Image (cartoon, rainbow, N blue to C red):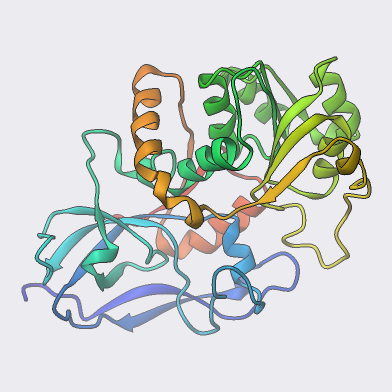
Length: 339
């Protein structure tokens, strides 16, 4: 094989975080690049994603996805170029989406590398709006929360990659009102610029009071929960009868070493006949084609737009992840690995 790399860099988990992760929890290592077996491809990664769910995988607990292992590389969504192939379905030069980020070079089975079409959208969109992030937003809103035209929708963490798409998809599908919460005045204004009908900064006062004011006399029918804690408690309080809650994340609790907050008013779900339903996007892959067709149209006609925040260099991926956890991103946080 021509110019086959002998070694490549990867980010390993050096230790498990206690509370907020720090750069000391990560290690940049130089490791051998394995030779290709039949059916495999060698990918030079160009972009990788950092996502909130990765924080849970840093804990040694049983969950829906195995934890990261100490002294082993992390993984996650990445887009890269095939530079060597022993797969019948891939050739050198193909751009592919796969799950072995946090490294310069990935060797994997060709069946786990999906060729992408950059004439539809830029490569990074397949890590966000056209990828797992977008499917999470769409499936959570339409399949889990069973959104219907005329609903009032509340989204927490609304300036993040998933939340910003949930609000825009709801508007595109005929929501009566879309409300978002975020952590700064700048992010609140950004949500209004994206077409949210109302938005508030959760640092400005109790979430329940701000949500009630934003909803006016309408209450809310759907809550897309990225945050948990006080936000979930507030949504239950303001929810209309037969309201539906899609529980996607609980970022307010990921780095907490204390007992989680609330919701202390769960009994309201009885009289209001609410539905609270947790979900993981991997259980909704059967809707990927349906989603891709709709999202392509929304991106084309401008109904949906997306934001990206970039960090440069594999060595800066840990800091990008830490920044993501602290709200340093607008939209999708992506690390560029080119160069």
